[in-house]
Structure formats: C-alpha cells, structure tokens
Image: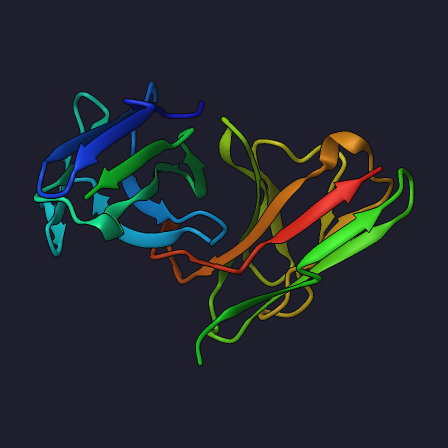
Length: 108
Length: 115
C-alpha cells in the first residue's frame, strides 16, 4: 500500500518554512526521505527507524510517529537548493514503498 | 568512486523485442532493487534482491524478470516489452541488515521508450 504524501505541491519564498507529511495504512519499521531534482536520481536525506530519534540533515529534519504511522519532513528557512520533489518511503519486511511525491519550489 | 551504474541510459525499442538493462554497484551492497518512475505515481518497486540468488517481487513485477548471480550485478530483463513499460527506470542498492534497509544509492536512470 503506497503511503500518502501531502501536500502534492508547495511554492515557497526563500527563507520560509515547509512541512511535508507522509502517512501509511500499515505498521512501519522505518521511514526514508529522498529528494529528487529534475532529471536526476533521488538522493538520500534521512532514515527514521522505529523507536528511534528525530534525525536532522542541515536545516531539514523529520519526525516519525509510529502509533499514527506517520512521518513529517520539516524544511526550515528554505533555500533555492531545496527545490525538487520529495519522496517518503515506508519499509516493511524488506520492501520499500515510495509515496507519490511532493513537489517543492522555492522562489527568490 | 562508490557508485551505481546503469546501461543503457536511453533506449528506444519496439514492442516484443527482448531487452536487458544492466545495473552494477561497487559498494559490496547486499540489497539491490529496481524501480520505475511515472508521472504522478512516484517510484514503484519492480523487483528486489536481498543477496545473491535471492530475489522477490515488488509492487509492479508483471512483464519483468531479474537475476542476481553475482553480488554486484542485478540486470532487469523485459522479455516482450510493451508500450505501457515506457518509463524511467532506476536501479538502487544498499546494505541490508535483517530486512531494515540502510541508505539507498540510486543509479542515474534509464529512460525507455517502447513503440
């Protein structure tokens, strides 16, 4: 079952914050976050493991609520380089299933 | 340099003509997988492999075959391609610990057009 991401698209000004949500109907062992720029391969941002802590990557951080089977990605003081499509991936027994993606556009 | 390579990067073919897309990684990763990416659908897993000679179906395996005879290689085979397999394909690899995956490293992608 593909996780559901919201919103589908976000447009920001440089310096603004954004939150991308990812929810699953199944119990999760881990949640992965990746960013993909146009015409390129997805690039790893972070993994959150069941029972683990909130993890950060520069000004990008994420949380994982195991009970609600949800994860959120927080982008603080966004930069132009944050533009791209963000995917969450939920892992359960070896399969990694990605959401449909959230397109983020940061404008000057 | 640690990397995942795919060949070819671009391919135009005709319906029914068998093709193979190769994937190779030089990081000694146990876990390898294939995804297809279509607009609005995100990345969908086709097949994955936990280790040599161990493969399993992902979410969209129909029309595809894989093999894992060596740890570094994980080719994707389309025995009889059809136009609905026109897509962008990514190979990925990672270390795998008891089914919980580490960072996945993606190849550059293969853009396939089936006429």
